[in-house]
Amino acid sequence: MLTLTNQPIDIERLRRECQLHTAGALVTFEGVVRSFSKGKNVVRLEYEATLALAHAEFDLIVQEVARHQPLLWVRCEHRTGMVLPGETAIWLAVATGHRAEGFEACRLLMDLIKSRLPVWKKEYYEDGESDWINGP
Amino acid sequence: MKRIDLHYVAMLRESAGKATESISTSSPDVATLFEEIAGRHAWPWPRHAFRPAVNDRVVDWQHPVEHGDRVLFLPPSSGG
View 1 (cartoon, helix red, strand yellow):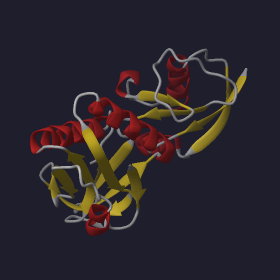
View 2: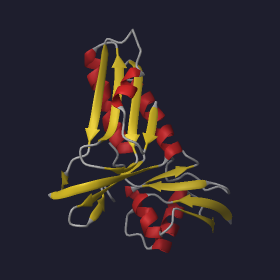
View 3: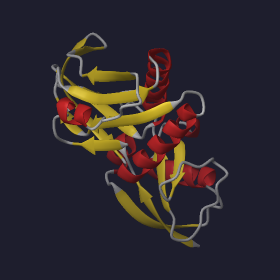
């Protein structure tokens, strides 16, 4: 399941959602906002997302990864709006039977999320400039 | 002519100066529609950098434009 939130990500709350007793591995990834980018100091980010499309695309991504790895549970929360350096931008958890497939599934999911989830990031710099990341 | 809703995101929203607009178009598919809208807003970006989405589903560029569609052009993702 994916949630998009403009509030700080509560990792403990998300972690408690996983109550599986069949999973031998719970692999998590936490993406944190860096305070520098392209040689500049970053003062904040703005994340923008399309809600319905993001959920639809996330479901497709999970289905694709599930064809290669035996997923038991997937949970992701992504920030929207203003996010400051040091704050968590994304939290992803993958439960699987064993650790090897958990690591691989988490890596695959993050790669696809970064390349396909309809979420866009604008960086604001200390010098007053700003830039859409991965802009065309 | 078909009436459709365009939703702009990220740099396209900033360039268009609005988040949505309702337009009439004779574009048969989303590729033609992109070129029409890009010309209208003088977008400098190539079509291949984007993905089209119609009614909350990512589609290919040959997807037909139908009356009442909700269309987005998705810039390269940068989430995570």
